[in-house]
Image (cartoon, rainbow, N blue to C red; front, top):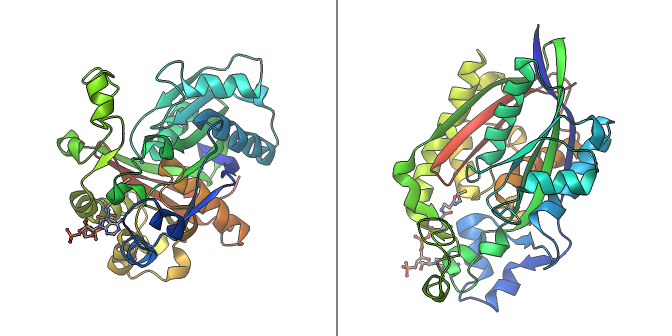
Length: 330
Ligand code: COA
């Protein structure tokens, strides 16, 4: 029994509008058949122009707070994982605080590609275990369509918009909560998945806009190769740190980037599909929001039980990869 960060609340938000593969056939040279076979994606939700990362994050956070039965004023920290902040500064975390309450709450944005949510859970859990924080809001929110190039068929078909939020809460003498995490990053693969323009390396200019440098660029094949190795490593290393093995895992909640990447992990671990959450067909890759969306869906379907060992794992730009091992329940 230890002091741990337990998941006291979970909330998600998905924009209403749906972009199907057939819609995409009218925008780029692609086909529903190609997208389904190569990625498993059938449709994705896309935000309205007036919906931003912070507005989606705020909606998800409201649901998470309600689920945790606490008020925004009870929060003592906000970690917002995102790769598409409303603005580089001020932070999306501060924008969410402002949309939730007039009470100041410290907060930061965290950028670790699609692994950001996993990093956020570990950092919040560590802050809670260190003793100074009680309730931390961990958000994963991205409006990837704002940096998706709809003239590039190799990336245009992959991404959607969404937000998810966890309330992590300090609990003493418990078996539940975040048991362990495994975090990794290796900048040697940085160019495989990159938004080249807009930072200090390539400030916005007429040329950077004309050359479409403010959109996400990806080497799909190399990223795929990295992901099929990173995902199982993250699962195994996270479990090892908790003194557990794959056999102890009740539910795997993998980042939803490509069904073939998930299937490779399922085959490698010889997992019963019942133990793996997959919803990429309806949302595409929503970056840091894929895991809360998938976990919420599993919960709604009654697939999460008190005491279950749940493994969240992701990979993405950086390159980054990692996992959180959680014993489900408050
Ligand atoms: N529609 C139709 N054809 C397409 C296409 C599309 N949307 N995108 C690419 N193609 C074509 C390519 O041009 C290529 O044609 P060619 O053989 O004539 O050159 C062919 O399909 C195969 O392309 P390839 O890139 O080898 O396909 P793939 O099977 O590797 O699938 C991805 C591409 C992007 C789906 C896949 O590599 C992937 O998912 N990578 C990992 C991405 C990821 O995880 N990113 C997020 C990390 S958070």
